[in-house]
Image (cartoon, rainbow, N blue to C red; front, top):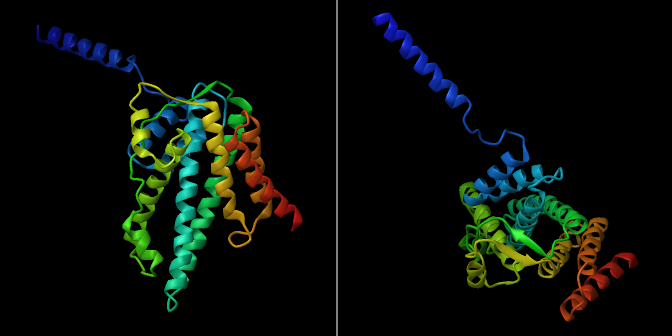
Length: 278
């Protein structure tokens, strides 16, 4: 009897183990679905650097998540670009303010510009692919309103004034600046530049959609603003400056002309003319 019960118990355990092993499984590591889940998790946590890495893995191929991932990548890479550019400029100001110890500020400015350049090129790549392949009337923002504040962190003013920060303070400031950059960028992409309250309301909808015209005008402006990074007084890379300006013009040419698009196109063409002249 005892042997019979033991055999029955073993059979129950085996059946339970089999049912568990054949139950629903999550996305397999390395698949687009896996990276999309990871990107949304990192985005929700406010870790936009890691989220950007994850969506880049998705956009390497065309799949069911690519269009949504490109939209997220555009927002994240543009936000990173803005954050790093501002940190670089602030460290330049710190070097001028602290004449006794300018080198740490200059070193940080150089590091931030290098990071900004990487993010700017990633942004340009995402926008280029979107213009080529995503022609739906609306761009779907398949993510929530971002974590962070659009306000300037206090540490930024300290650096501009020439104050040397501890490494932990610099890391916290960089995180806050990246989050700020993403918040402000998403407001621009949603058609509400500098209006976080209005953008928050937009993101209360079950599905957030932005018209293609609004999105591409915003991306053209983001590209043009980022092109400043490659000017002669900064990285001095005219080829990359031209690349971003050309991509900005392509974005503008893909949508109907308005007063605003014409004004931006005039600025871009003036910049391109200067590049040709030099």
